[in-house]
Length: 238
Image (cartoon, rainbow, N blue to C red; front, side, top):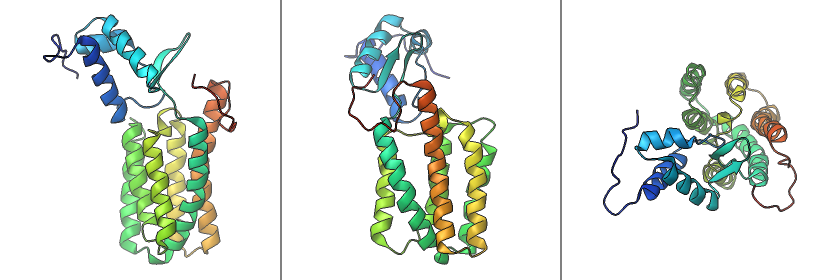
């Protein structure tokens, strides 16, 4: 529970306090993309009126971290659609290859560790914390691709995941139904590795798993925004 702050730290206005408080929670994933920012609730948490909170929201909006829509209000900015599309398309290809190349080097202990992580993901589904779920998701996939013997491909995978962090991605925050499908697909990937599936079959399965998340994102964007993510033409942020 947040502790109300009735007096800002010395030298810090109430508006600055609200700005830093909200921005910190966007940065650490507490407030995920699409999270609605209720001014009154934030003001209550901080022990201030809605006026400094509104000023902070406007500042964050100018920085592109927050958007404001009529009849919706303020919310944490969604992902840059085109950048997300390109990153996920690229990651699906390179991670698929990396997973296939890693398979011969994945041990029984690795498989058990991956299953333990996936079980933790399953256990979190009822009370989903999208940010934590995404962390576990990376931990799971790292077990499958880190044994890739090609350092150039592995570097591209790392770049892709790092890019997702820059985009502040947690797709599961706004398409939580994808989380349940994701853990089921994880089981399938582990079964393919255990059964000694050929490299192409495993690569395509890993690629389809990644594009499944992308498809969920595209479907969400299509239903909530007038401009589809697949449109790469330059445009201003809403």
